[in-house]
Structure formats: C-alpha cells, structure tokens
Amino acid sequence: MTASVTLMVCVNRRFGPTTPSCAGRGSERLADQLTAMIAERALDVRIERSACQGRCAFGPAMRRLPQLEIFLQVTDADLANIVDSCAALPSQKVAENDDLPPPI
Image 1 (cartoon, rainbow, N blue to C red):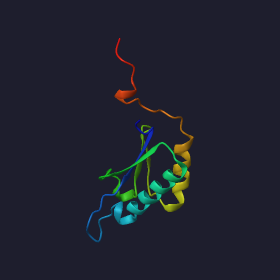
Image 2 (cartoon, one colour):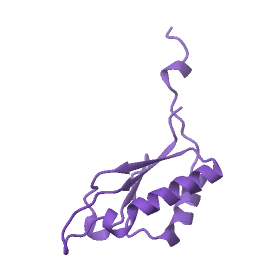
Image 3 (cartoon, one colour):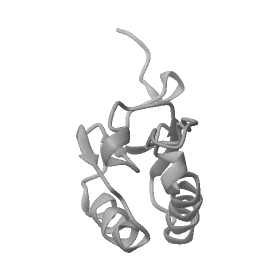
Image 4 (cartoon, rainbow, N blue to C red):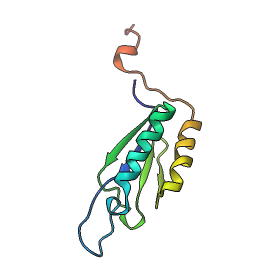
C-alpha cells in the first residue's frame, strides 16, 4: 500500500555566506526527527527528502501531499503539530495493482 500522506522535506543545501537553504537551516535534522515521530506513532505517513522547493528564503520548507499544504520556517516546536495534523487526516489509501479486483 502507498502511504496516505507524504511529507516532502526540502534538504537542499546551497553554499555561500549569504545564500539561504533549507539544509543550512537544519531541515535534515528535522526530517530525522519527523521520521522517528511517525514511526513511534505507526502513522501511514511517508517522509520524503526532496530537492529545492523554491522557498529557500523561508526555509526549512515542507509540503504535505496530497493536501498540497506547505509549511515554512519549520522549527522543532512545529513538528508535533505537523505530525498531529497528519494523524487527524482521514485515511486515503490508494490500492496497489495487486489489491485491485480483476477487470470485468
């Protein structure tokens, strides 16, 4: 089965003293924490580390799919609320081909 929710965490790193990036602001550590929190609660949520989401100036940035929500300037303090909001969503599992009935 495919996870009903995906959290895409930008882990893009830009180099340069004046160039902001999500990874430069701790997104890799946030992704690790989210992975642990999701596993601890056994939620049907996939954490995906992504390339740039075009929000570096407001990072760390995360997107929640399929809801198309974006979270900006995410901090450790935000993670519990993000996980809770994922847990509160109705399950929208997508059947894999093996789970589908045969065609008529």
